[in-house]
Length: 135
Image (cartoon, rainbow, N blue to C red):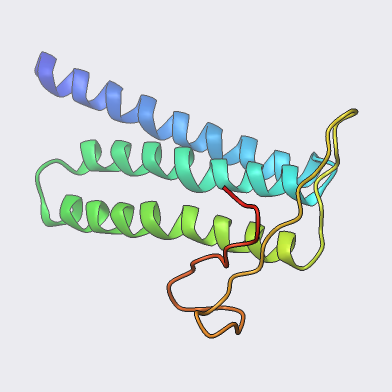
């Protein structure tokens, strides 16, 4: 085994083990953290950091093959959909009334519902209705 191949092998395993570590930490956080918002954060760490490191390690393991291309496509898909899904779940929870715990001395702002130009809620563009006095 050449030195370059050995370095590639070691680096790929470091990435895979690091990704597995982030996945385990995210799973443990989802199980142990006290409220929805903390658990959502732990789950998003698993989606983002764990997935990126695991796929990068697997790409190094597979070399320059069609498998690498497939892994990159899967990674791009997960890189886009993971944070989008986390944001959608968090926004739905916030709008439905689930509030994060407030720190002492802080005042939580009310979320503004999404509105359509005609005044109905939930437009396709996701713009917020301007309120009087808002900057």
